[in-house]
Length: 170
Image 1: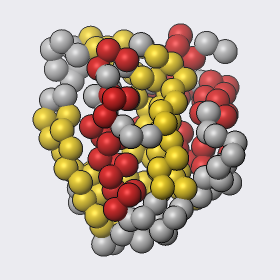
Image 2: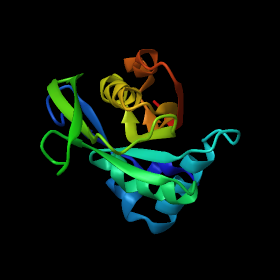
Image 3: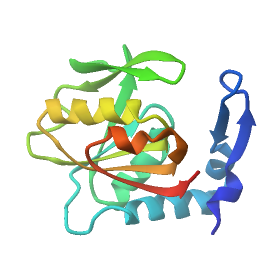
Image 4: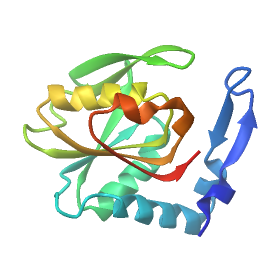
């Protein structure tokens, strides 16, 4: 299946000069959604048991939960500041067009747990790097970062100190 056909370009979103890669057509196709989750789970190294899958707000939640189910792992949402109800660790990170804060529950990860991080797209790597740092602060081991797509020209992979796997590269 060619999932690239189900990702559309939206020019000048969220600001002029940005071409946004929209995955909503892929998500709307039941077969493609299942196929994508299966493929992403298949990118995980077979020699390491994944204990938890992190989905990054918001699009990382959709497939992150599906990947966790396929790997028989727990699911952890990493959210924007102020969205989680219990005690959190926070990390600021830079965006292509600003700055934001991500949070994870302090009790989400036990020391030594193997963690897979999932999001829809790897751009500059700032978001994924912040999540990797949150995992390490809690004693987790980042096994891999998975993405539906990677925007190679932004070199986000260079900011990450872990294995990166993507279904598509632009």
